[in-house]
Image (cartoon, rainbow, N blue to C red):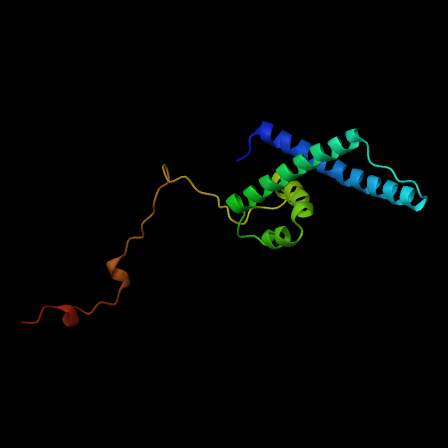
Length: 140
């Protein structure tokens, strides 16, 4: 389903998304406290570039988990969580379903090979039936 290089890239996107959440919290508290102290500053261009890069990776992870959900797992209850908690649930879905495979896919099935299997047909034994020849004989 997923190649090893793609999975490694998605793991990088996962950790970049976690870093983005932490970075957003830190920047928000810094801005709040500096504004409270009366100091108005704008974030450095390097900080803004980092946020844009991490956000791009997060969006890529979200789009891939959405693609994976609709292709392989569309019958599960995860669609409700994707509807209400889009980006945050993409992290949980990726970790549990794609990366660690802690939950089986609802829309998938295990196919059995057909070639090489033997088919056992039950044979009917005529002695097992109560058969009245008079009723079923041809009447002339």
